[in-house]
Length: 77
Image 1: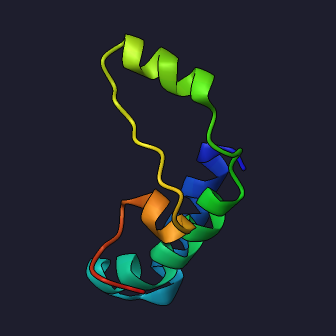
Image 2 (image 1 turned 135 degrees about the vertical axis):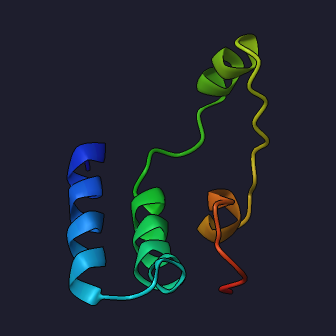
């Protein structure tokens, strides 16, 4: 899914649900991000090498998508 479409979806859903920002992040946003991230391509070592070349160091996490996401708002497991 393209980023622009995802952002539009999130903006519309935020307005429709009428939740506080934190409630939205802990609920709909969290669930949607896990869904989006789980559909991404698997870890690519070549990509990681290129990132390290420009100073970004990623660590492969063999855990589930929740651990991989590492952008969690609070504990949701």
